[in-house]
Image 1 (cartoon, rainbow, N blue to C red):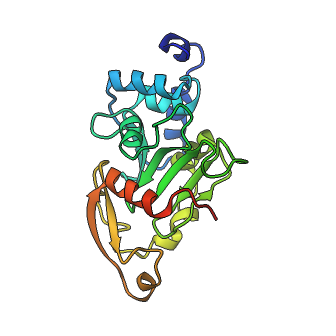
Image 2 (spheres, helix red, strand yellow):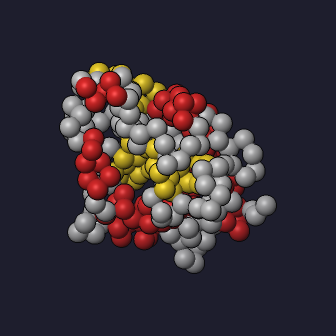
Image 3 (cartoon, helix red, strand yellow):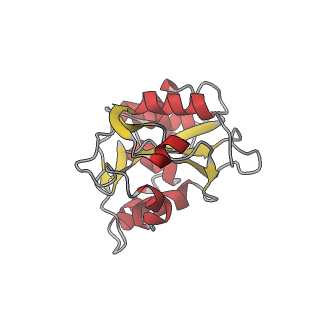
Length: 220
């Protein structure tokens, strides 16, 4: 296992690139959240990634990143909610080689995970998306760095157009980092397509755990 000193890259850190994307003409209104230093160190050691990598930069240098006024939430090392504690809470960091690692979510309850082999043995390192309206994980066919670039500067509606008619889609302010909307009937069900579903706020980690219990690691 590499030490904290070996993982912190002071020569070529990833944070400046993230800040450059945030300030680009295509930027989507992202905000860096304050970090918890002890939690940041623990997360970097647990993941064994360097701060040159963008995942390492996010978990070590930030408390997370909110995008589009908080609709998208990239997990970092914040006191309110963090990548390490969220994954521990839903049982995804129980081994040295986790099958998946939850790295982001959205206020509708969609999940984004880094595949460690549990979703597809041929796509290790890819980001998979479990949409709020889907019951299967779908590979985005990109790694974390390209996923982060898309979050900060990419075509948001390319992913979210099917959900834009939900009454909470543009309802602001969006929920805090530790909460998401839960829908009844489930958005992927036939019942939800026949009539508008009702929605309520629930704890984000509890909702993620429920979705994993229902879906597991099934992919399309």
